[in-house]
Structures are given as structure tokens and as C-alpha cells.
Length: 209
Image (cartoon, rainbow, N blue to C red; front, side, top):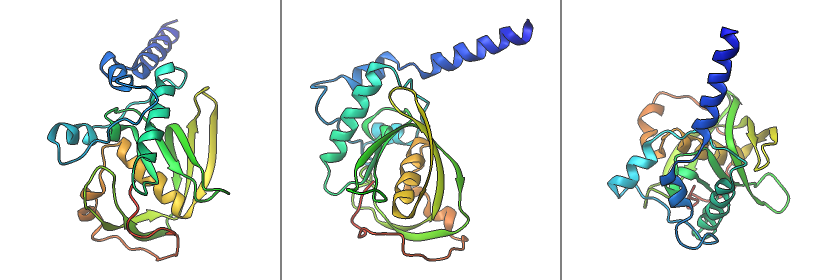
């Protein structure tokens, strides 16, 4: 009975942790719910604090989550060449991302809720990256060539898939955002890394995520 009670407490705590706060709901629904949310910048100290915070999971079936997903897409479409965006970049520290799928016909934009990378290949790429939240910043970064990804959709349906090449790079970049990791902070950590260079990058160094 004690074990069952502890399990129920854990489940209730997990569900409550997924619920959006009133402040988050206010941001998500500010203004016209069909328009883009402003993209946070590291040049603003308050916005940078949000960008550096770790994100929590989100309830995929909450109607506010659907609004956030739609407005994040509009935010990405409003950029000049952006190929991905994460919820912290619009002021919400929750696990939601959009990625352009260069590995699919038509290169569609797709959303991913509570994404988790469950495996990364040891083989890495070295390639150019920019960021929608860091003005005028460019750099060369290491990313695994292949990843395994798990996530859910707005109905709570679970998925798992293998992604490789440039699309895998975008996923890794956006999921880094969910842990408060910015590419401007990665360079020092990678000084001693070794890599095998492969041709995974289809875009020029002007792409932003």
C-alpha cells in the first residue's frame, strides 16, 4: 500500500509539473493567437535568463500547448532562413520544438513535443551554425551524424525514429535550447574533441536555429 501511495504521489506530481503556469499561459495567449510570438535575444538580460533556463515537459493535450505550437511555427516562418526553433526562444521554458525536415520530401516543418534524444552516433560532423536568438553569431560545431529521437504529438501519441545528416544537426541544436545550452557557450567545451568530417550540411553558414 505504501508503494502504491508513493506511486500515486509521483504521478500526480508529474502531471502538475506538466501544467502551464498562469504566467506562461499569459505569454502564449498575448495578442492575436494566430500570429508569431517575439523571438527572445541574448542581448536582453531578462530574455537571456529565460534562454539559459532548463525547460520542463508540457502537457500535450492542453489547448494552450496547441496555441504555443502554432505560434512558434509563425515565429519561425517570420525569420529570414530559420530552420528550427525551441519554446525558450519565445519565452516559454517548455519542451516544444519545430524542425525543418530536410530528410523528407518537400522539406516540411514539423513540431515535436517533449523530445528526447535516446542515442547519438559516435561519428560526428563539424559544420556551421547560427542562432535566431544570438545576433550576428556564427561558428563551427560538432554534432552526431545520427540520432534516435522519441517525442509525442498534440494527442499524446508517442513516436520514435532515427534521424541523420543535417536534420539531425537541427534536432540537436533545438534540444540543446531545452537544456539552456547556447552555441555561443559550446566552443570552449569542444576544444579537445575529435571528429570525422562528413558532408551532412546542406545549407550555408547563414542558417539560423
